[in-house]
Amino acid sequence: MNSLAIIGVDVVDCTGAPTRERQDVLVEDGRITSVAPSGTAAAASSNSGIVIDGAGLTLVPGLMDAHAHVALLGSDGTHGDLPWAEHVLQVVDVIGRALDEGFTTLRDACGTEPIFATLVASGRVRGPRILPSGSVLSQTGGHGDLRPAHHGGSRPPTIPGLVARPEVVDGVDAVMRMTREQLRRGATQIKMFAGGGALSPTDPLESVQFTVDEIRAAVTVARSWGTYVHTHCHTKPTMHNALDAGVRCIEHGTDMDEETADRIVAEGVFVVPTLSVSHDLLQAREAAGITPAQIAKLESMQGRRDEGMRVMVERGVKMASGSDIVGPVQDRRGRELTYKAAVIGNERALVAATRTTAELIGRADDLGTVEIGKIADLVLTDGNPLDDIEALADPVRIQYVVQGGRVVRDQRSATATAA
Ligand SMILES: [Zn+2]
Image 1 (tube, rainbow, N blue to C red):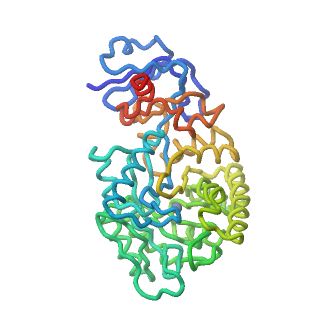
Image 2: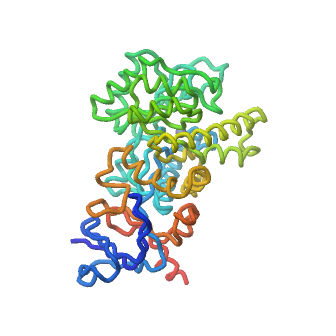
Image 3: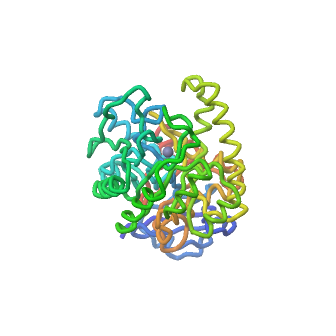
């Protein structure tokens, strides 16, 4: 039996309970078996496995990013243009870095070939569990149709087993076929662009993409496979189309208002606001070659999105957490929590990135909180994130990461060895 004891740690369990100071947390065969005031659990002394001194540290559930793009290595949000061997190595780096920063689960919101999830699950690549959407479905001229307006012909293809490029499909039959194809290749849920984006080459932000019938076709196929559809939506008409079609999750949700929020609550749908991506673009505006008109658009979207998040909190929308970060480095993934905390507070930002994302991916029984019986995906950080959210945003402060009961990052021993 593999066991782990974390002694004397402050626990933020993300169930809504207040911080419990100086607890012993015991783990056997990958699951949490006890959380009790330090020194009271007999198992701590009889434990023959690994012991971590958690004094002065805070333990939280493993973090989750419900909107990752680990294979979109171009700073413009495309796959970039590395030689394929280098591309694969870089994706592996990005995945490993996410784990070191305390992320034990990534739902990949398109672009990543499901083989990467398989390689992690089989232990051949070090990283968080990955739930890949595979190739995103886009209509012709939609957010995933990356041809410039003056290019007519074909787009660079998806290469199964290597790269999952956007798939452009039109009409109910084509959507059904492509949804089945994504599921066959290992997608765990289906992603669709249901409206325009801020920076894609030809589609207006306000455009509504796919008909309700087309989205519903994907929903029908996904449900019959036991999974769901999530849709990129910034505007209100796109959100209502997606709701009419029966999606489980709305990405971005920028123009949320009370009417839409109430409908989302009534239908049990999740929303994943993504803050890091627009902060990144505005910070790197010159390097990214963004025009003044695009900057104005991004700033206006940020204001509407922050207001929309306040509406979601007030109306009780289930808000999960996604970063939408892209590019070659993808570090400081936890900064999404800092940006969210500035709008909705530290605890809500942390719960979004743990418990609510676990509910969204259908793993609430196993993941998302520190409770007896759950999988021991845990993070020990220097500082209590309920008081200081930077304790999760600054990777240097992440002291230990535990994945399924195994210690996969040990910053203290690493520092001691280096000294
Ligand atoms: Zn995205």
